[in-house]
Amino acid sequence: MGVLPFFAYTTIFLLIPTLVVAIGAFLGADNTFTTSNVRALSQPAIVSSLEHSVILSAVTSVVGAVVGGLLAYAVTTAREGGTLRRLVTSLCGVLAQFGGVTLAFAFIATVGLQGFLTLRLQSIGIDLGNSTWLFEWNKGLMLVYTYFQIPLMLIVFLPAVEGLRPQWREAAETLGGSAWDYWRRVGGPILAPSFIGATLLLFTNAFSAYATAAALVSQGSPILPLNIAGTFSSEVILGQENIGKAMALAMVAVVAVVMTLYALLERRTSKWLGR
Image (tube, rainbow, N blue to C red; front, side, top):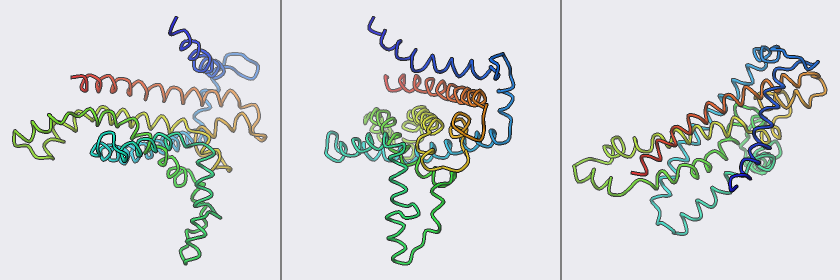
């Protein structure tokens, strides 16, 4: 009985929406079975938006993983329970959830066409250009996505770094190993599964993000979530709802593969840290 609320929650908010998407992806306008919606995924505009989503997610997840991983290690060198450590972890906990329209507005107000920093720099002779880069998927979106990927990486990766036991490094040094030897033969292999798993989690986080991109990009649908939204809300493209569901089904498939890999890596990491 204790897990009944969990099953009810996953059924209402995960299983039923997934079934609606999966069934709708194979229905035509007359509610008969068809594969035309899935075959429509080969259209150049959809393929292009999928490529952009994958590139955007991959770049921001790798940058976020590297910077966030280094930050996580730096945090572990601070005194346990100290003010600096608690401040950084608390701040990252907040920033990791600071997304959506609020984050988009913060960047527009800072480096947008009439942003605070843009005008300040212009007053001293530094021009950032026309500042439309903020609204492009391969510039502005990458910067904004990286902003919440780094703190999320710290929150996810910090327990793995904290799991490294000082005795392992002491043993390596006792045997004559250098710092490089320790990270190459001990620390690196132990943290690798957790690091890769956290990177996959960041990829999924960016791949499924919508609100921030919708608030920044008002023209076109350069990434797949915006393309899906366009099939349901566009006043120009009508009768494409089931193609939108087919695109959503493709996203579900990509996320399912990534999260399966993440679960396998997480299981291996737990075995290492449990020893």
